[in-house]
Amino acid sequence: MTGSTLRMLLALCLGPALAIGSQAALAQTRPMPRPAECLGEARSDRLQGLTPEGDLILMSGQLARLSGIRFPDASPHREHALSWLRARIGQTADVLGPDRRDRWNRIAVRIRSSDEPPALDWARGLVEAGLALVDAGLDGVFCQPELLALEATARERRLGVWADDRYKPLDANQSERLRERIGSFVLVEGRVRSIGERKQRTYLNFGGLWAEDFTIIIPKTTWKQMSDRGLNAEALKGRRIRTRGILQSWQGTAVSIVIPDMIERLEGDHLPR
Image 1 (cartoon, rainbow, N blue to C red):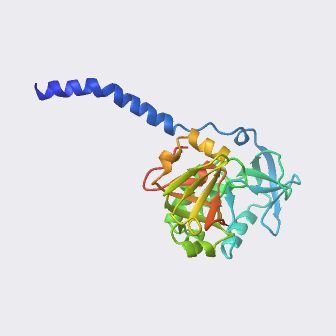
Image 2: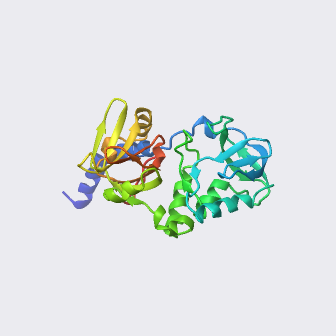
């Protein structure tokens, strides 16, 4: 059998299998539909001022916060972020977000300047400058997943908070350092050693000592969303990942996530969105 004949037979045999494999990969990484809360028409408003806590006071009388991000908790980084916002007081802006208030009477919004050419998304501008961290934990939905890539670039360039060791990702295996940060918003990186799927929640374990090691706690509904994206136990076990959230004291330390995007896969490949 000649080499050309052999190549032809291989192509005929493997072609359908390769096509099926490619279709499966595409299906696994197909973007999820955007939640309804991320859609809708923007309304015109103005920034009137800021509260001492950094909440936005809109000219319409509403109290708001920027969805998808959080401000640094330490000076001078926090003051730099608030100064960035104060520079936009009085500007006309397009505001998008549901009119649903949290326990502090705030609405979560996305805001884009309409006076500045080109229009500037405020959350994007803050994250790009390293003046805010990506955090959708309070939102219920994450409407701007592109913020994660912008944050990564700012971190690589050591802009803003990323020049400060306090904000850099922590190693999941450094139990003592993690315990020192309990109660703070953190980024944690490590390799998933085991996964425990229970009826109400799933546990991603990063060590073998449950009383000391780091764990990610995922509620049932969030785990279902992740599984629908192809992020099941098989896809995560043994992988290096990064998560973010408020660090808790729970059989060692733990972070609870309700937004699938608050987990990122490292080592050069990304989780399906």
